[in-house]
Length: 95
Image (cartoon, rainbow, N blue to C red; front, side, top):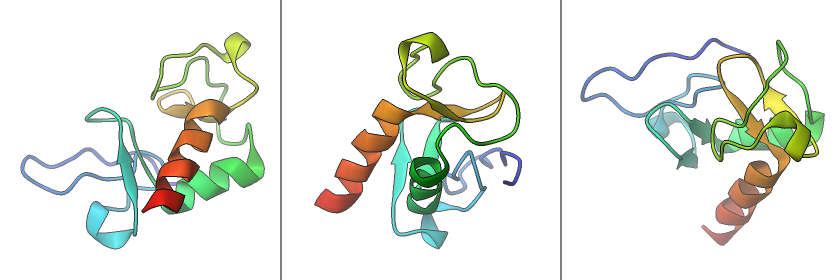
């Protein structure tokens, strides 16, 4: 998993997990300026569950704490919970 690449001023938004830009993926869910996830990382999160470097404490997308969700995918800087992953999957299917 690549480190988060900051968005260049005026540049395309990037996935906070892998660093791919909106132009490099078929889907990019943008929750906040820094909480963005691409279709590939959504499916990686769904497949590996609770994977990633470090111990995430809170979902970067909805703010849920680790004790309040089934699992968190990610690390100490960016993470996504199972509920937000499912929401992203539903959005991808609808596109």
